[in-house]
Length: 449
Image 1 (cartoon, rainbow, N blue to C red):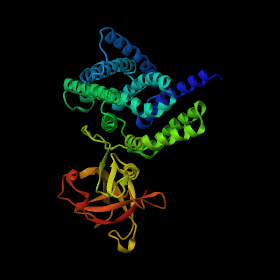
Image 2: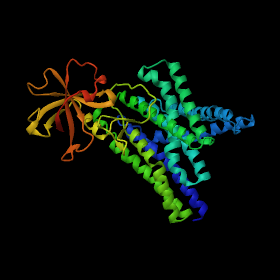
Image 3: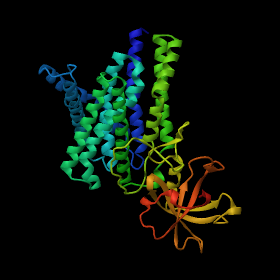
Image 4: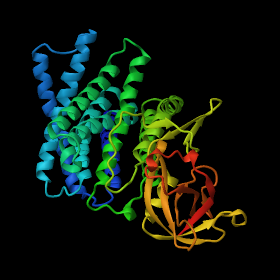
């Protein structure tokens, strides 16, 4: 096989992988009433056609003498209106076509966002193929995690604005559309502008990453709200966090392997190994945060979370961190529910047995039958579950909460989740304002079904 055919094969394979990863992701978060694969493939193909619309408008701009010229203001405005507006408008045309075709198959809020995302994936797939031909397969990982996801985020945001009032009865229809479109176009344009503008050195790349991270958090919040309002909502069907993270890790690893193999073919082993470790250390940590964030949701039936401008991580003081910065003792938690925080969700409205970890100094003394009745967020996004004990004399005038243990020994015998048992006075009516540190830990318990 000639070098040109090998290169073409790798470019096509890389473009397909970059698209398949996010389609696979959408199918895995669509847990209540999953879309069939063929409508999604159709949406992908339609999305692949949308760059032609975009190129038509680019040709008109260039004929009019509108383009980049190296001047700050000109390039700034061109990035937003010439690039951001043009590309988002082109993708939205594809979304309108797809939603019109499959309007009878759309039966829950997240379907709108998934079809919008898949159209954006189609656009990004064609764009990625072009970049692979220009810069080689070495850009597959950043194109898959940066550029493709940026396209998905912004297109989804516009569609979310269109349907926010219809689905959630939030805001005003016209205002929702205008604000969402403005934010998406500005986000797209600024992301590209800071990537193209090198006058401020590494600072411009830093600004692009900030826009990217805030956009990811926005996107996950939109997906979260959509699933919370599904008419097919069922706690039993939810399997978020751990499985999705591992799946994303697989796709990330595959992009790294593709790059490594391609580098061996076009260069040598030593250079390939050097580039492998450079990619791992330059982007690996950031992509780890991204994979964790997009796999974590706050699953509460019919609960709407306002979209907030936030990074996908924050400093925590609640002993639930995902990592700790050495020497500085700064504890960082990625937003959303981690695996241990999510486990009791599947026990809501079900009978369980609450067992003391240490029966010699126990509040309960013995295993007690109980029911997890609800799920709450305390101050600082601490996840807790209310529990009612089916035992005379326990909790008659108090509310008991279970807080999942996320550090140290988190399970008994590898299967029974460990929880902190807390007592709250019944006079407390707004748990969202309660700081977990203000509550007394009665004891550690573990749950059996």
